[in-house]
Image (cartoon, rainbow, N blue to C red; front, side):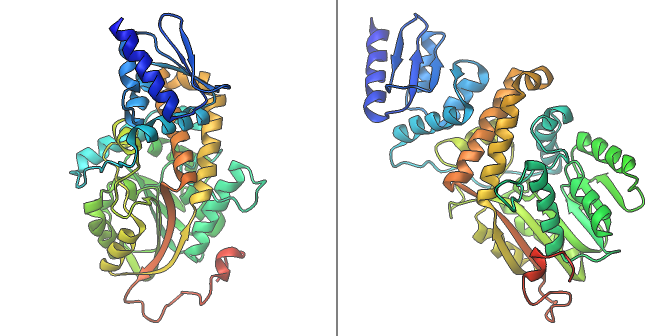
Length: 402
């Protein structure tokens, strides 16, 4: 009887606060609808599952979903929207802060990268494009496919660097090798990529071999802190999110040391929209840190620009691709949903549920402006004459010739 009264009180509070398209299905067969036309059903298999609905946030709800303590039915984008509504009503005006200053070591960073990227190449292939590009696409038209948008993104990055045939390119955090291969094959450069993921390394090397690019393109298993040499262009795509806020000055200083006198760097990375770098709101950041990106931290764009400048770099162009990433993540989510059965066979139900709700949450977060994606182009600050620096941005949107 006490449990029943507590449940009734909880349902009354939810119904009064959040008119969400949600149905609650209880362990005893009872069903409660919080709106006339629910699109999402949360099934509570046992009374103990009620705790997830008491003062919920996105970390708590995500845990329940991932660990199978609740069962959820409905379109995954709707599932996240309902979860966000429950968390927002529970939080009110409060937006809890996230602790900063995590300890990044080589071993911790390596383990974090392996946890995220070494799931399975076959798993990622279920929702990525044919080039296995795991970063924001660039939609030059509304009708562009994911494959077309990812190739356009690679070319957009390479055009911004204004590379010439024979130039040396370094890609820090090269993923499965798409950017270095594109640079070598279509822009005529000598391209080197580095990663901490052994799965990515093996896949990239095999693709390079099959494409016959071994004389112009290579990928190595290396930490960015160990890099040496001099490069005309440096790219960092979806990498600096793993570096840590306190280590960004060190990171950009290292990049500066690798640049030729007239070299350029393009940093393509996710940023928080909160100027105090509280990650993502309503417990979303805590969920990602726990289940998806251990050790990950997002800076605000103002910190990025400050730390790049302090490292001896002159920022010459900044472009937000937030709306592009919202669409990219939505397409990834839909593709994973379509292939959910195969995903579970490859990676298991728990890991698949992590990626389902993570990708849907990212699509929502980018669309709502919780997070952003910036491409920041910079040259060495002592390149005062702007060698190889075009006077306008026209070259970025043309045929790539400077």
